[in-house]
Structure formats: structure tokens, C-alpha cells
Amino acid sequence: MNLYRKYRPQKFSDIVQQEFAVKTLKNILITRRIAHAYLFNGPRGTGKTSLAKVFAKALNCLDDTSYEPCLKCKNCLDFDEGKFIDYFEIDAASRGKVQEMRDLIDKVKYAPAQGKYKVYVLDESHMLSAGASNAFLKTLEEPPEHVIFILATTDPHKILPTIKSRCQVFDFTRIGVKAIKERLEYVCSVEKIKISDQALDYISYYAEGGLRDALSILDQLWAYSEDEIDESVLAAVFGTTGYEKVYSYIKAVFEKDFKKILEFGNEYYENGVDFKLFTEDILKVLKDIIYLKWSSSHKVVLPFLAGYRDEIQAMDDLMLHSFLERLNNEYYQMRKSEDMKLALELVIYDFIKRPLKKEEKRSSDIELKNTKVVEKEEPENINPFKISKMFKEKIEEKRPNPNISKKTKAKKIKNENKDNYEPTEDELVLINAFDLVLSNLERESLFIGSCLRKSEIRWAEDKKSVVVYFGKGHNFHFERTLSKKEILQDELMQILGKELKLDIILVENKKLENEKQQNKKENNQKIDKTTENKEDVQETLERLSEEDELLRALKKNIKVKKIEIMEDDKNGKKT
Ligand SMILES: Nc1ncnc2c1ncn2[C@@H]1O[C@H](COP(=O)(O)OP(=O)(O)OP(=O)(O)O)[C@@H](O)[C@H]1O
Ligand SMILES: [Mg+2]
Ligand SMILES: [Zn+2]
Image (cartoon, rainbow, N blue to C red):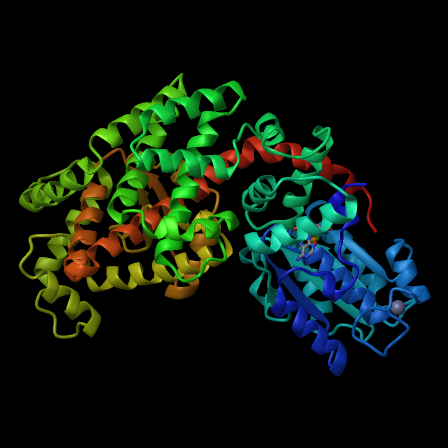
């Protein structure tokens, strides 16, 4: 049996993290104030189905001395063997049709045959068709006393608000690196799996908050290894060195020991390390080093780094920042190289020779932009900029406007002396609405949020439609966003309270970037000199974690395929 199935939590105390959901459900059991519909929302493999099962089991456990299921009574035993007949798991993705929903609703009214409650878990409930959702709504409004619905979803935005509002909602969070590591350690000790601390670190971090993924990866490595799961197994299965080696490599960079870098590189090469992944790992470790230096919350950071805290505190901020930024900037270019190892070594060589090159260049960049602002106003024949030009003209007409809000006023005053793009009132409303939608979306998916952050929004001339556009080089973000067009449009309409059309377009033009940079620069001018460096670091971190999401997405395409195959058998059998 797969590890992740074997180690499915049997009771509340087995659930890792998700304290809020666990605590609330326990209280519900204790007080017996049982609601009839719950929505479990959160990333894959974070315990939604597991907790639904524990809750269902506890609701029907014959021993009511504790909120925990006793695991000994007939109902509990039947439940664990998949024989409890009042528990139903329905996959809305494959059975979300209206007719099937009607059949289900028909059966709902019959009393439970074995336990006190019939519990229906609707997995992937965002996949319910509109018809099915509506059919379901009526039942949800007045559910029979003996029925509990638990809707699980990774994408709550696609769930009808009318459904959502009838559910008690629980947000499941990504599981922290440390918590994953502890769970893996536990599983390894029970299964007598020999594994190095490095490998544990690697899996815990790599799983990105999903415990199922972490256990699947452990399974894969275990299947491959003959004895201990160590760095050689990591290299063979993943093409990685493990993070400790990455750290040593980074240290050699900061010691400017190029000879050591080459030696390390050759050694890793012989072990079959994939240098693309290695570069990604360097970026991750660098980012965590900086987090560790700058942030008080170390939950998300690679566990082993804590052991090097003193060493890390002594590292030069500016150098760290510069290296991170440069490697990050070069990364996309490097990936096109036939010889990734060489590409990496070249970047490092360059960094060692001129560690702060970019820093110097950056300040001159800013000057350059300052003097070139005027250029931006030259006529453009590409569509979206016609729009922004139009807005600019409108602003000229409009000023001064007695009705402007405080916020707008502040913005206007700030911009007064600059011949620069400035949003109108309408546009500010739109931008604020967009910001709100964005933060909402971001809460559900960091990834889609980070895609959208690369875009700008404007009213089209008719004011009935809006245009979200992406600048050059953002094809990937653009395409991802396209797939979320409907949600985006819905949310915007809801916030703005009117019908509108939404277009998402890609612009092969640099001006968008200029505009953005300029705005950013203005904001930065406010920043006190002493905090400037910190802001820089923060900014790079933000940018990097956005790109991290991209790396993840790309990486997932390649690597998680394997895991999905292993999961196939799970889908077939419903317990
Ligand atoms: N919070 C958790 N505590 C303990 N084990 C967990 C937790 N989350 C996931 N797991 C492990 O991962 C496996 C799968 O978890 P589960 O099916 O509950 O995830 P899910 O959130 O329902 O994911 P999906 O969205 O893919 O359906 C479990 O069998 C268990 O081994
Ligand atoms: Mg599930
Ligand atoms: Zn029991």
C-alpha cells in the first residue's frame, strides 16, 4: 500500500497542522451544535478528505465519551474498512452532472441505515456543473436532520456564492516544512526506512506544503534505494545534490573560491546532478538565507539552515542580494544554454570578479529613467497605449476636480511635478477593484495571483469593457491568466456592481514596463535612505517568490506526473 494511504489520519490527533479546522470540528462534536454543510478549502494533499473522514467517523462513533472516534466500536471498525454504509465520497469532477445530483438528492432523504448521520463528501466540488449546483442548492437550504455535507475544493472561486454562503468554511493551509519533516520522520521510524537528514530536508521542502506529495516522494525514493535514502539516491531520482551541498557551493561563491566551485561542479556532474535543478536550488537556498537574516518567521525556511545561523548573520547583505538578483535575472537565459553547468559557472565567475556590478548599474538606470520620462509620451500606435494616452488627455481636461477623493488627491499632489501617467478617478476605482480581486485570488492561488501581478488594467474607450494587458515577455503569465478569465470577470463585476466585458491581451511593447518602473520608482522615493537596502531585498524576495511559483509550475509538469500515476488507484477505490 502507498505510504500516503497507509498513513491516512485515523483520528483528530493524527492530523498535522490545520489547527483551526481541527479545533472547530472538535468543538462542534463536543457541543453537538452540528451544522449540515461544511466547505473544506485548500491546496492538494493538505488533509481535506482525511479530516472529513475523521469527522464523519466521530459523528457516527458509538462511544460518545470523547470527541475522538474510539476506533473500536462496530461503526469505527466498519468505517476504517470502508464498509460503513452511511458514508459517501462523491467525485464531482467525474459525477457532477445534473441527473446524478438529482439521484443523490433523492437518496438523501432516507434515514441512515447504520449510523446517526449520513455523511456526503463532495470532492472537487468546484467541478459541479451549474445545473447540478442549482439542483443541490435546494437540498442545502433545508437539509434533512440526519445529513451532513462536506464539500472539498482546491478552487473555491468556482463555487457558487449561494452554495458557499450556506456552508461553514474552513481554509486548509499548506503544511509547513518543519511539520512535514516531522511527519516523514515518524513514518520512516515506523516503517524502519533509513534516510539521511539531507534527504528528509529535501523532500519536506520540495513537497511545497502538500503532505501527500511528500509521502509519495518518500515512497518513490524508498522504492529506488537499496539501503539508506541519501544524497546518492536524491541525485539518481531527482538529479539534485540535496540542499546542504547547495549551501556549501554558495559558501564557496562568497569565499570567492572559484577553484572549489569547479571542483564541486565536476563532482556533482559525475554524480548525475541536473544543473538546471541545481541552479533553482541555489536560488531557493539563497532566498531562504535572506529570509533567515531578515525575517522573524522561520517556519518556511529550510530546516538545516538554522544550524548555520551565525555564519549566515555574518554574510554581507548587499552581496547576497546582488548574487540572488543576478542569478535570478540570468536564470531564464541560462536555461536556453546547452551546457547549464558552464552557464552557471560563467555567471558565478562574473559575480566573483564584479560582485556589485548590477548595484552600480541600477542607480544609473534610475537616473536614466528620470531623464527619459518625456519620451514615454510620444505617440504610439499600439492599441492599449492609445487607451492610456486617451486617459492622459482626459486627466488634463479633468484637472482640477473638486470631487476628488483624498486618496486621489494625495496621488495627484505627489505627481504634480511629473509629466507622467496618472489614473483618472474612474480608473482608480477600477485599479482598486482589480487590486481587491487580485488579493482575493491570491489567497486561493499564489500562482495565479503572481501571474496577474504582471498585468495592468484599463477601461476601454466605451467604458463598458476593461482590458487587462501583459507586457512583453509575459506570455506565460498571460496564458495562465486567460484560463481564469471568467472568474476574474465575475469578481470584477461583483465588486464594481455592473456588467462589463473583459479582454486579456498581450502587448509586444516595452512601455508598460516603463510605466510600472516609473510608478515603482516614485513609491520608492518616499523610502528613507536607511531602509532602502531592506526594501530592495524585500522587493527581490517578492519577485523571486513569484517566479518560484513559475518554477514550481514548470517543475510540477515534469516531476509530479509520476506521483499522479501512483495516485490513480486511489481514484478507483472509494472507501
Ligand atoms: N494534515 C494532514 N495530516 C496528516 N496527514 C495528511 C495531512 N494532509 C495530507 N496528509 C496525508 O496525505 C494523504 C492525502 O491527504 P488528503 O486526501 O486528506 O488530502 P486532500 O486535502 O483531500 O487532497 P486533495 O485536494 O488532492 O483531495 C493522507 O492520506 C495523509 O497520508
Ligand atoms: Mg481530497
Ligand atoms: Zn467508535
